[in-house]
Length: 231
Image 1 (cartoon, rainbow, N blue to C red):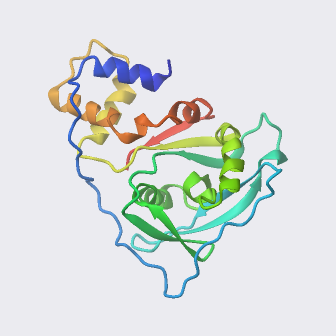
Image 2: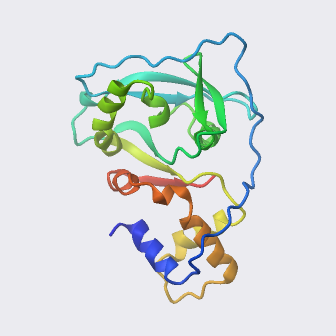
């Protein structure tokens, strides 16, 4: 059993089991900046289908209300020994609802991303500017089945060869920090009496959509290291 399943089972055996209400985000997001008029649509640089090529995103620094601006370049995963990680980060997250969507700039073209990913990009612009990141929603051409099939076959290698994996749980809520702090410090102290507010915070944490994804275990298990972000 993986650590997250263990924590979930241990905590939920001690908590109420009804689904908690969703809490609103507690932090400010940028205005919905738009690309300049007549900006062309972003197109993915083509990959060699028989190779280990992938695309990696670099998020440019910017001011708080600037439109998210990125570059996307091709990277060959076969250029280094299998045992050595590459200097990029892989993102593990949920796509979230199909709407609303946001516009960003990739290679000077307009790209559409879902809200949950856009919120990660807002945070990432501050935390990891100019670092290479693999994000399926952008790095795979979602309109090209051949490209999707080719990249899906490489996904195990992508997560295994990344220098680290970031788990993005989504926007913070009122007690997100409380839950994460408790889990990091007292996760295995089952003698600790959990106050009601903390019970609710932990329940909300484990009922986030991220934990229902089928790929979660594989993406985390393959990771060289894992960083969990919640807003």
